[in-house]
Length: 283
Image (cartoon, rainbow, N blue to C red):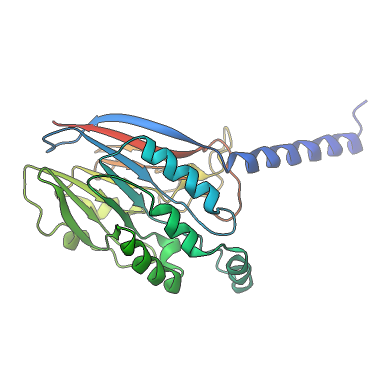
């Protein structure tokens, strides 16, 4: 006979087991591969996207090392990091202090990311968590540049004759300016843009971009069957949890990565971490 006490005991075991499984999933990642036409491109291009590393209390050097190794094994032409390199913690002051005390040395993050290799370069943008820790952000900008990783903040450049790469500051915690990032772009070429938060895609409407790469939403991080994600950091709810989006469903062609590291708590459920490999073709 299933008594109330036994039912609660079994329910508790289930919750604990599910929580343990979700914690284990937080540190697993897979490769997501896509082959797509990128308008304006003149020759094939392989791009690897890392997003939402959240280096800090839950993510240490070993995780970053594994991601970098997997990225290099793909022999990309270009590597992009779409924000939230570090974890800033929650907004309560005592929790921020606890996060700070538990976080590993930033130089380890810089050292591991400095091992990324791509002939067209390695580029990053800031996310809301990066901007939430200004002192760490200043340190990272200087040290990443010394390792050959350029952070694009409302700026762009030609990485190849047929490819203009641009990046904006974070939508929530920065001052994003897509028009400034696209200065110098010439028509009839590919324009790849980096914007951490897909909510910002509204501001690319009508601008000359072939595709915007984003992260931020983590696929919900915890996704419950039949219910979806209990919370997402987006004004649009669950619309931009991950994957491909094209007009008219979105204001611009874009892709949202589920990211690599967990935020808040080291949990993932039905929202696996991913390193994304794009094989873009001329079109």
